[in-house]
Image 1 (cartoon, one colour):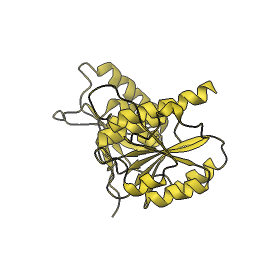
Image 2 (cartoon, helix red, strand yellow; image 1 turned 120 degrees about the vertical axis):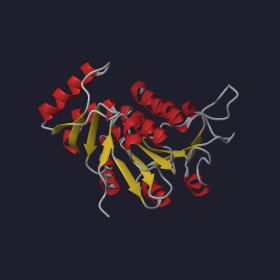
Image 3 (cartoon, rainbow, N blue to C red; image 1 turned 135 degrees about the vertical axis):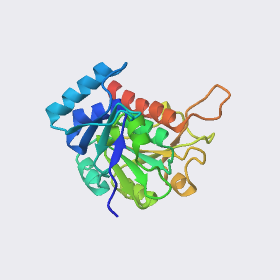
Image 4 (cartoon, rainbow, N blue to C red; image 1 turned 90 degrees about the vertical axis):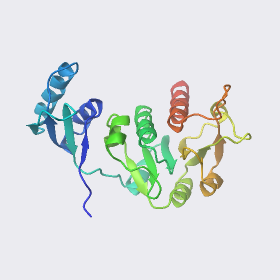
Length: 242
């Protein structure tokens, strides 16, 4: 079955995609050029015109002032990413062990893009569907960060281990180390577990190192996207100070 086009109304996402990958937008539909976002809308429309994106005037009843009709989402090829990373000394990939919440996934994509991750690995089964909610939460970075759909995450992690990557898993286990005590691995796959279950037993066994974020409050753990932000920042901080 042919993948369906995606309609998004997040102005931040539309703006980002126009700046980075405007050809992915099939059409913009404008229904309202007034109100508190009028100035921003005009800037986006002008950018779209410079990029040659078709603009259609929509009906007055639309709840969104601007809607972008996107080409069907394109996943990146994991093997191509691997070949590219063979040529670099330092790299970080993010693997998501059955993350299903669009807001969490989108936020992780946004942070991963901001801190220079090379790609995100997403299992085919029991994972989020990339739709309008993901585009909005990621402010469009799902279009600029390689996202690879893999049939068997465990097999993919084993292959990456053979290529010199260290598999670093996040956990609540008491024997896990805080992020700042992790050795300085040149190539890392940071594995984040599902919102409630954490890492699956098979993926947990594949980890070379386990890290946990110390918490002093009353909650047991952080939201997975917040944990990702902290750990991705720590990886970037190490690169900047060494």
